[in-house]
Length: 243
Image 1 (cartoon, one colour):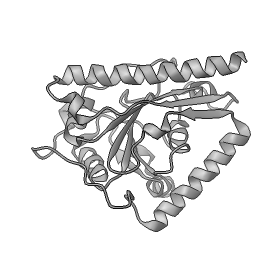
Image 2 (cartoon, helix red, strand yellow):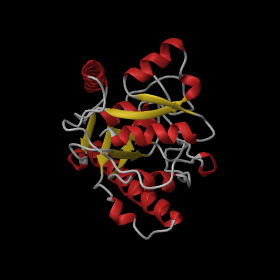
Image 3 (cartoon, rainbow, N blue to C red):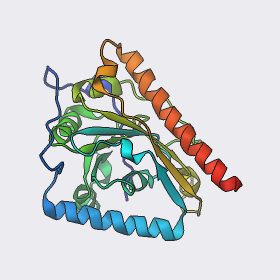
Image 4 (spheres, rainbow, N blue to C red):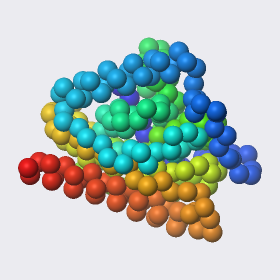
């Protein structure tokens, strides 16, 4: 449906000074009841199709806090990634998508399931404000800090501006690793092929863990934790395929 990338460019990410603290809503919802119902319908439909057509399994999803703002950061292998990140979670996801995808019909559909636009060259001021606003309202925002889908299935370098964003967010950051979606639908192929999929949600990184770290160190920590989750997903997949 969309290519939810998050090319975060520090030269385009400016926001009001001061710390942005998440203010969760009492029930953890960040959208209207009607949109929440629609999201769950889409999630259930996607989950049913994935169960029928693909063998998928997720571990660690209880590491995602049950309420309050959360940043979900994942490796990015395929157009399908945002679906598989959302299927194991009861809480609805928000995610960023290229502004060029927001055409009259497609854009309405993307927005209806929590997507919001960013420019290809960087998340920009509006993207930063929208991300922080959804976190403050108690939502989960999904980011792909590599900025684009992987060309070879490996984790690429993270955009340096991710450090600025997580500092301003002041929310738990849950790293995620995906394996298998690259084989199902890589960026180099126009059709889907069946392949098992594994997802691993890692332990949340707290804002306190980032205190005193330089931006480069923050980026390295995020990349390291994402790589750990990716390896866990890869190892799960290899083990299951060997059985």
